[in-house]
Amino acid sequence: MDPTTPHGSDIFAVRLRKLADLRTQGIDPYRQSCSQSHSTEEVRRLLGDRDQCEERVSVAGRILSFRLMGKAAFLTLLDRAGTIQCYVKQDTIGEAAYVSFKTYDIGDIVGVSGSIFRTATGEVTVRVEKITLVSKSLRALPDKFHGLTNEDQIYRERHLDLITNQESRKRAFQRIAIVKEIRKFLWTRDFVEVETPFLQNVAGGAAARPFVTHMNALDRDFFLRISLELYLKRLLVAGFDRVFEMGRVFRNEGLSRKHNPEFTMLELYQAYGDHRTMMDLVRDLIQHLCREVIGTTDIVQAGGETIHLGGNWEEVTYCDLIRRRTGIDGWFELSKEEKLRRCADFSVAVNPELEHFSIDGNVFEKMVEPTLIQPTFVTQLPRELCPLAKLNRMDPRYLDVFELCINGQEVAPAYSEQNDPILQRELFEKQVGDDIQALDREFLRALEYGMPPAGGMGIGIDRLVILLTGAANIRDTILYPSLRPPTE
Figure 1: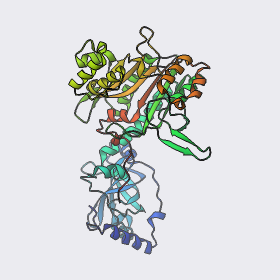
Figure 2: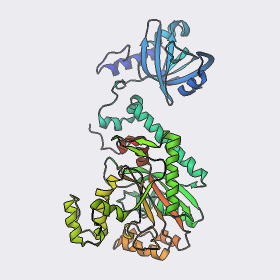
Figure 3: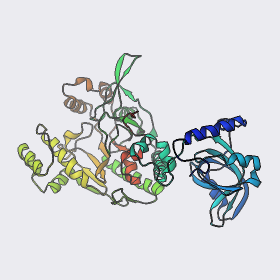
């Protein structure tokens, strides 16, 4: 609670008057500066097990709590690393500075400098010798015990959520650490990171509705990329044997607990590898992130389920999963009409115009995938589902691919990449049908120069963060998710 300002709608006006009073005294906080020699975490490390340290430190941050006790006060400051207590005494900083200090409010940003000691209760504390107000907070922060309670405000005013909600703050920094560790992991395995165009002539590499924009300089429409795949494969042609990109992709589709139209994708390709190379890579990567960032391979999810990410992961074919879940060994021999009837029995809504493989896909998505809680490699998908993967040599009805499913959702698809330019063109032409403009001729031409056999994989970073942090919603893993425009 602010010690010197009233509750209610007049807080903003009171703080404006305080700012005006400071400026009248020749003090403009927005023109002040301070040094920051240590973060709060570094201050704690510096003190260690000692009771005091005479080394002078400078810390800066936002006031979260403010407790006046006559001629002394305790503050709690928040910086990037966490919080720390500060002890301010009139005899130390001087009477004039203390009078000014008593007008500070929760939310103000200050710099302090002094020595470090440990209180009788064991709290690491900065004994303040100098304090400088460097930014005046004109609006009151949300209640520190309850934080933001309106869901829309949590996502729209994320800065307030991150100040007052330590769980949100922790998850945000975990995401940052996850992204950092992914890069380190791939660099140690000789992958190189590249950047490919956001604006593309053809929306290729995935089956998704793109966002369309117009480039005035060329007077033509372009698409925001829906995938990173086709440009990265051109780099395989160019001799970039291990290549990855982590960046934003855009799909003009629905909003849900698992979907945001703008999201972060990791795609990587390894020449002379295949989908089994990718199996080992993704398992090693996720287990590495568990150890280095989360500290455990047993992750508790929002619903209370514990995901066990250590050790080996189950591998099972797509067809076996559908047979197992439907209880029908001869599912794939059923007529279309019989499949539709059985879907109705299972309460699985299916468009009757769909082809056999799409009906099977609906059954997998609605009946099978939600049951795959522990990490499962789903292999041997039907050839119709992906034109960019190699056909299985033993049975060309299926693809050399996997979908890694964890906690009821796909986390990472991976392929033995199709590198036959003739077959690739045939598969693309069948996929686009009459929409010949959707054919990426430049990619097909590049493939005709020869692309080495390769394994490739995509990982949705937001979904990975949901998994590793136990978040309940994709919005909780994105600092600023897509929202409706605010109403006035």
